[in-house]
Amino acid sequence: MNFLRRISLRRYSHMPGNPPLAVRIDITNKCNLLCKMCGYPLQANDPKFDMPPWLMEKIVDQVLPYAEWATLSCQYEPFMSAHFDEILEILRKSPCPLGMTTNATLLNERRARVLLQHPTIRGLSISFDGATKDTFEKIRVNARWEKVVANLERFAALRRELDPQGEFLLQFNTVLMRSTIHEFPAFVELCAQFGARRIAAIRYVPIQPGVDEGIPDWDTHIETLLHAKKLAHKHGIELLLPLDDPRLKLPDDTPAERGANEAAIGEFSNFCEAPWRGLQIYPNGDVHPCLFYGEAFGNLREQDFLEIWNSPRYQQLRRSLAKMQLHPQCARCNPHGYDNAEHKKRINTVA
Image (cartoon, rainbow, N blue to C red; front, side, top):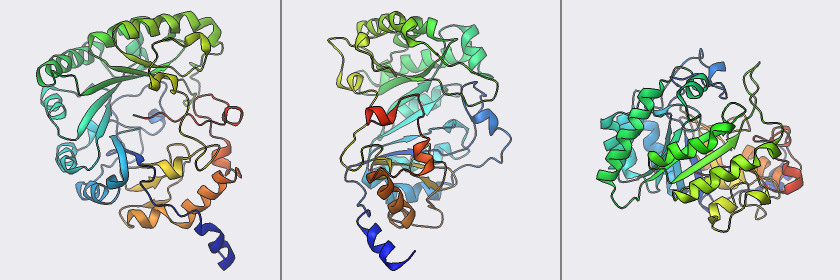
């Protein structure tokens, strides 16, 4: 890179933490399920590894002081990590609140108690699809309905015992698909039984060859979605829908429900502000600006965080987004079916 080029990029250096970061951390690249809407089946035979505890120490010291929140797991099952207990102990020192995402197949009583009594973990997101045994087990391959339901019922009972004020957030994440949309109101009722405070529904994105669960015509499901939302409000549950349709607005919608399909935009870029506002850390230490860019911008095993954050690659990405001269990866990015160019908004789910 020549001298003038370096000068032109310096303005795209950025102090992390302004705004506070949203940080997603995978502590393993393993999962025990082969869900039909997930990319993991395509990676199932790849070499497996877990984040070493010393690397989490470094993340706590160098990254999390700049974060508004962080969540364990974005793509994999954190309970599969051989170092899960040690990492949870390290995270007691986290300067920011934490959440965790799990498929709940391994959520035993000991782990439930540890999570509910942890000083910095403030919430748990459960990945769950379908409202009946048949639908659930066809989608979440290798999971057993009875076991997961029993785990969640036990967690709900422990939460009532250990968190009587309801401060611990329980969220359910689900993918709306052809084979699940008709069960969505029943899914809301099921989540209410488990004590959910929020449900985040996203659109299906085709990933696995030969599997297409996409919903081509949302108009035919508006009544189902509206019924599900009214049920959610009846139970005091926030329902975040992946559809910005006036027919789905209710007078008692929360700010999170009203803003479910947009992220903060316009301060740095009219398209996406990921390289200013968040990052994704893989279990091997790779740092990505987001889940969808597909390339690491550095590695925390070998580099300090601030060195990566203001590296030439990060500055180049910020410049491209600020000037709307999109890199090919960004131009193709439309992960949940929205027309980003039309709406000038970036759908970016937040834990």
